[in-house]
Length: 41
Image (cartoon, rainbow, N blue to C red; front, side, top):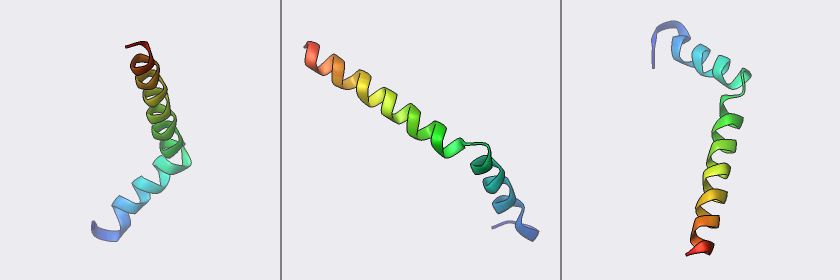
């Protein structure tokens, strides 16, 4: 933890800007690409 909520304030702002959604979309994209490569082999 950090003094006076610095960490949670930063995390809340990242969430507000859509960071979690961006990570999820990136993971899904990678998964689809990996699946396609697997099917080609």
